[in-house]
Image 1 (tube, rainbow, N blue to C red):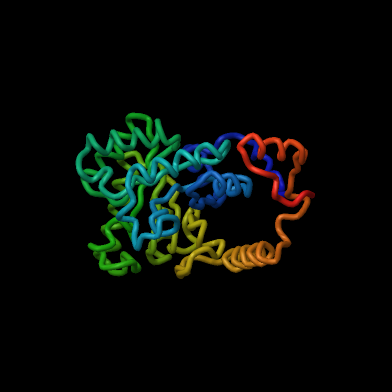
Image 2: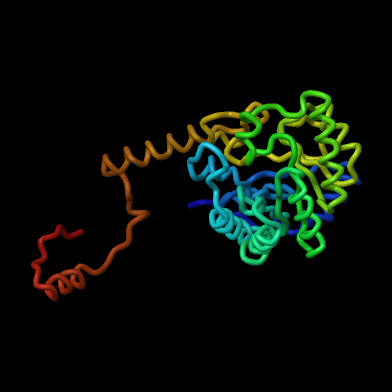
Length: 297
């Protein structure tokens, strides 16, 4: 029987809470989750925020990128995660083309993530004029928005693959400008993905809102990592991820043991079995016109 996981107590983490953590120099801990069970465990571990990432396209749905992920996919995952959480801040990714088509559609879809999905905030990639307008509009409407610059997976084809970003003066200056623009538009935090550590440290010092790094060094205000990478559930291990346990091997071993027990007749045991009165079963067989040919216990 699995151990009962008690709920985490304490005040709800909010967008303002993360800003307070930056002010106190206490690093912010964020991790992805995509379902009720993983979100419950992650919250119990005492982290500050969950990102319901569109990385579920690769980790859960088996796609090669985040691009095929739909708004319905994200709503389903966000709803499951939000049901599990009593304390952590739940941030939901806005998937590809759910906000890039028009301002009105972006506002409407972000509202669905909050109202129907139960998210406490949404995350948008990039700092285009449309994205900045959405950050401003959503913030004015009371929806906290997290920005995301550097390696933005929804632009993977334009970027030429998953690679380090902002490696020259022009690109670094643009990233700095984008971060300042996101802050000015009302973003409560900015994810810095796969950029040089020295640049991430300068951005962090420049902004009054928190930076959340992924592959951006230790100088950010916090870190976010993918649940499956940390637990050894991914086939490919990104350079920015540390594997804290190899659950893949443990799961395969457990399932192999289960299969062997079934084939050997060792499972289920008496502990997993319930019984009924033999006379009742015999009467049921007779009621459907069948004789009792089974073995009695």
